[in-house]
Image (cartoon, rainbow, N blue to C red; front, top):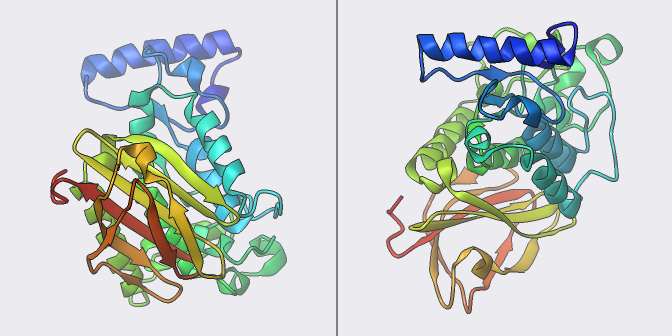
Amino acid sequence: MAADLGHSIGVNHQFWKDFRKSVKKANPEAIILAEHYGDPSSWMRGDQWDTVMNYDAFMEPITWFLTGMEKHSDEFQAEWYGNGDKFFRTMEHNMSKFQRQSLDVAMNELSNHDHSRFLTRTNSTVGRIATKGAKAANENVEKCILREAVVMQMTWPGAPTVYYGDEAGMVGWTDPDNRRSYPWGKQDWELIEFHKDMIRIHKKYECFRSGSYKSIASGSHWICYGRFNKKLQAVILINNRRETLTVDLPIWQIGILENACLKRVMQTTQSTYNVGEVMERAEDGILHVTVGPQTASVYIAAKNVEEN
């Protein structure tokens, strides 16, 4: 961990200040990205790190909300699971520790080299390879929850970072089981195409890369948030309930006023996903929608929905 380097916090900070000077002298465009848990703000004042691997303001809250699991699959917390209000409050508290420039390039991962694969966490089973065995990492997993998480990864503030194999449906308990060989010849091709489609959406609409963020509404096992800039607004609805959700979303909060048209550009389902474009109409700044169980939907609103 970058914060552990040195014999004292003073030595640590001085090292990173000197490190930054050397790096930026060699390449002013280089990004200094640290692995760090906890509040990073004292390192991100413009004189040390540029950003961090985003555990606190991305990986952990999303894992708790969608699966109830800790990122190593070491525990299940019922009070976190599906608590939309707690999710937003936790995310926004931890995001407040970042300067905006650092948040926009934070490393947003669902899995990585140290923790269980996100797809394995969707089985909400506590365990490691030594206690459960390798086969159990693939038992009762739910790809629909992974798809919801990927939609969030590609639409949340930060830099989406896919850990090799997640896009192909890889599973695994925490280190070392999370470092399995890539499944050549056994890839989940639909999941790969889904990742490509969400990456395309992330790249197409500028608001997902540098737009503002706002939580819009939440409930038990569902959340809705917005990303927006001066040209365009996006609404993301995540329904992790195992039942259909009918809800009125106050999208006026992100500047979608009166009777506006929105284009749905992505909707996942329990079994697959759909990128067919469907138009929805908001009335008086309220979007009335009904979505199926365990789905994620992305809506785009603008004078010209092709603008970015």
